[in-house]
Length: 200
Image (cartoon, rainbow, N blue to C red):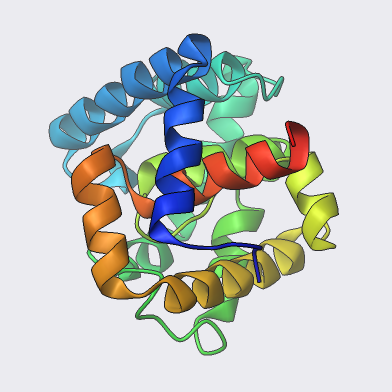
């Protein structure tokens, strides 16, 4: 479990994060672009390679993930993504707090592996933007801190750990944190992880 996991602590670290204008600005900008894109294409399986390259890979690189962003990479990911559209649609309107991660393990692994041309850190960021209530954000230092690998099994394990942390925090605190911060709780946890691992 995270040390000192509480509503006040998470909001404190969120305020610290807001001082980093570069990261916060790119997050807000691309979050709006993801919302606009989803509104335009209706379902994620309708995404084309150019939209994925500009929005998803563009966001990952703006957030310092340094992943490949060529049209060829975008096309490969989109082609694979369309083959697992049912698995991705399954998590629509669900919340990581409420799903059975053991039962849904194969779906999560299929989704994660369809982004195999994208580095692990970028995968977590892109997946989060595509469904910010299900998929958490990570990077190499956070994976090291939690002792998980950057593969699909590691991502599934990380989701289990995050789910436990959210259960520890409690729904009432989560609701209050999201109302105050105006960002999803999984983003708040990422900010906290980033700071305790990189700044403290």
